[in-house]
Length: 335
Ligand code: HH2
Image 1 (cartoon, rainbow, N blue to C red):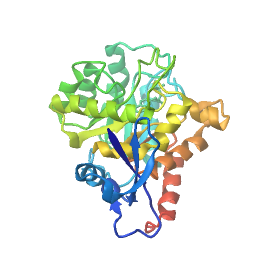
Image 2 (cartoon, rainbow, N blue to C red; image 1 turned 60 degrees about the vertical axis):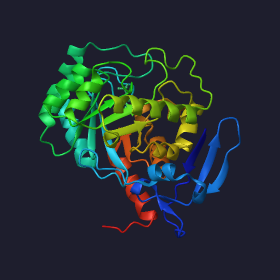
Image 3 (cartoon, protein in one colour; image 1 turned 90 degrees about the vertical axis):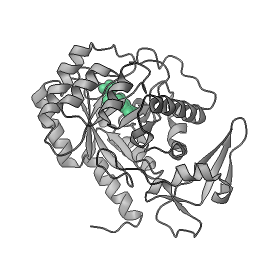
Image 4 (cartoon, rainbow, N blue to C red; image 1 turned 120 degrees about the vertical axis):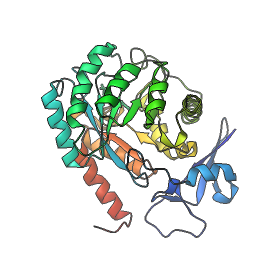
């Protein structure tokens, strides 16, 4: 099988044959042609089959009311005692709601609210406990003026969150954990994030292995999209995510970030969640997760430059500022 990865560009003179990447501000006139076991080569867009080009270029429908022609910031709100970078800080509902309002004021376009840590080695949380953590916070924020996503693998938690006012579901298991989740999402007609993971949080970092991590993750996501579609979830409401840190070594994470634009070929908006993760600490030499903002920004900008539409981050104000500079340098009119 042959894969075509668009070489995303912004800011310089655009050649006449260039095409908009996913209807956004990045464009491409060349692709990297990838085949298993063969060296990559560059080719002009004229070599790309029409069906692949159609998926790479089609404008993405707005998601939960948000335009998908630019990178949008998804602020992270972990209502947990044990999340890897902010565990315990927002377990109290009042503290969680206050933090949500801070993230919204700082420039988050949407919020991702989770009640179960999925950090490596994390233990599962019972459904009732996860609902008790998340639903009241969502209910308190339903009029906050920005879409709310529930970060859960479980149908019961998603159902309660949607009833409380959430408008999107983020499933780090991509519908592999709870057979009931697809039906809940399909019935509600809300967007769904399908994230790649190898293994479960309890064991995923033991010995992750791939044939070719970029192509393996892409194939896997294509399969999960088909499963979601089969369950009645329309492709236009599906978001794909390579799952940084979920069953991946630092080298795997880097290969996925380097190759991110490949995922536009799946025809869905792309989400990246790299904020404060361990590989950023390893490479930047910062042991403390809450001090990994500089490395996190470097990754966010690399993702924006490859046309990623959703950036899931802890440090919203800093990401907003970095993106504003990136857009200005790319030549976007200042407003
Ligand atoms: N990462 C985490 C949780 N949910 N969802 C998506 N779609 N993509 C991700 O990369 C992702 C995610 C882990 O980060 P965090 O929520 O900060 O930590 P914890 O799982 O410890 O609560």
